[in-house]
Image 1 (tube, rainbow, N blue to C red):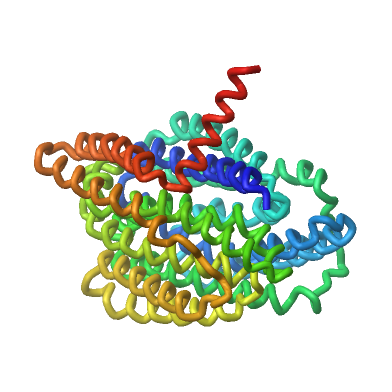
Image 2 (cartoon, one colour; image 1 turned 120 degrees about the horizontal axis):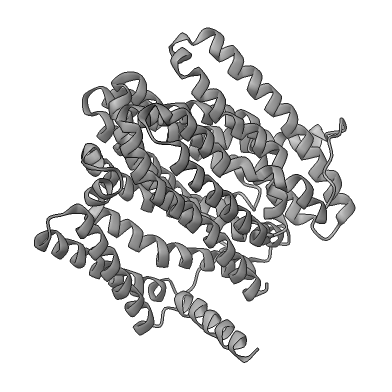
Amino acid sequence: MSKNSVKNNTIFNTIKSVLSVVYPLITFPYTTRVLMTENVGKIGFGSSIVSYFTLIASLGISTYAVRECARLREDKAALEETASQIFSINIVSTAVSYFALLVTFLFARKLDEYRLLICIQSSVILFSTLGAEWINTAMEDFRFIAIRTMIMQAVSLALMFIFVRRPEDYIKYAMISVLSSSGAHIANILYRRRFCRIRFTLSMGMKKHLRSIVLMFSLILSQTIYVNSDMTILGLIKGDYETGLYSTAVRIYTIVNTTIASISLVVLPKLSYYFAGKDYKEIGKLMKYSLNFILVLGLPCIFGLEVIGPQIIVFMAGEAYAGAGLALRILSAAMLCSFIGGWIGNNSFIPAGREDLSLKISVVSALINIVLNFILIPKWGLYAAAFTTFLSELFGMICGFVFMDKNIRIEGLRSMLTGPLIGCAGILAIGIAAQLLLTEAWLITLVTVALSVIWYIAVMVVSKNEFFMGFAEMAVSKIKKRGEQ
């Protein structure tokens, strides 16, 4: 395993994830104030509906494709055949998804007022299928993905400020959001030819792929249900206002969660290769690397949201969304469980071909979430929605520990935790002090973030955190090389 290769991939994938954070950080405070709470709720409700049809189209193909193509990366003919078969299956599933959406419009009359919005948001399904970005991930081409993301988000940012000026512009906002998240997939149709030629074929190899795809689909279906059911049920029971509040908390939660969990994409190709050869020494190294990433970057985010979550909500979205503060704090607790449960599932179950186990855990988690949502949301609204997410993630994390492959060894866990925990204790102290001394939400947020970053970096350096120092030394080395040229 090339350490520099993994680190470079981590850097590019982190850049992509950070861009995905910076974009909403810039647009979110603007759009929430312009569109108002009800229209933000409509956007969130429409997205939750589209997510189910996106799931039908994707069939869990992306993760399965990354795993299978990563195993065949040295055999171009086999890679091309497998990639074309998976792509063709995805084309068929996309057609089925759009047909299902049409049928839903015919019978679900409550969706009539959301029809145009949902149609626009659903275009991400077609773009994602045609782009087949999973081939870039399987071939570890994270550089191109990062550059493409940067360009599309810059264009979308400009369009956002030009065209989204009034509450009724929420349709324009939906169109620009689609462009930001999925428009660049079209560029991949030509670019991916550098790896292999992907074409539509009637010989889809269903016997070879169907079982694993169905298992992966079922897994992602259950995950999507318990991620989105709270938003959907909240929208149906409590209406657009509470959904708007909750979607604001979920947006911030998702930004952080997606950024940290993105490490799984970096290590999945190599982990799939090592699991195929049962190389547990290298598996342990990669899993330790990804756990370090989660601890060093994820823990301070969780502690930061816990201590100044309400102020972050007001800073980003305005006083009208202050009621989402407690929900964000509950979701940040769920985030810790999500990080650890996802680390085990995505880094050991999936690359090892144990998606059937992941499916069973996820199905029970989804059932817990749905049942509790119907029981608790009518009385406690968005806070119940956040709490059921926490319970579902907690269950998944516990099951992950119970069923984790005992051949996997993660050494030096205590030393991995020392620096991050000391740093997080300081973040709590800084956040509490800022709230005692300051009154404005924006000032509390900026002061806490600035001082926490300085404190946390200092702790990482003094404690000589292995993960942090590895990247610091790599950055210094590159700077010196450029200076010598």
